[in-house]
Length: 126
Image 1: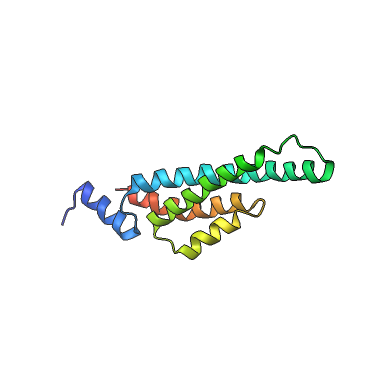
Image 2: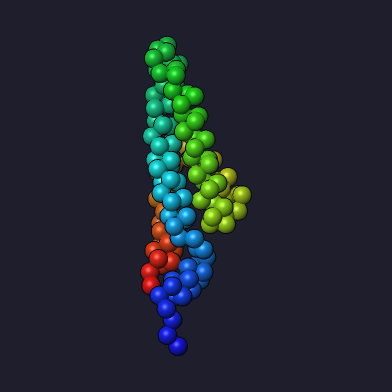
């Protein structure tokens, strides 16, 4: 039995659990951007704390709220991608908590991308 291209794509997508590849792709892209931003913002926050408490320099005290907004954006992208991928709340919480440790946000971004991208590529292939 010959299947049309759209039927094969739908079968591949459903077999891999990705119902809307375009939505998943956008969510993954924003997750990757925000994971990198949160990881980079963490280093600026560390520099701000060293300057403030180590050298009594208040030059970067404005950074804490900025970092907070960036991190809230990261939390949203974790929730967005997690609900699309049907992750458990525990997994989403672990990703968010892990990103609170310097360098771990970059590792998490690569690990999640390595998991989602092959499934996404498989769902787009004929």
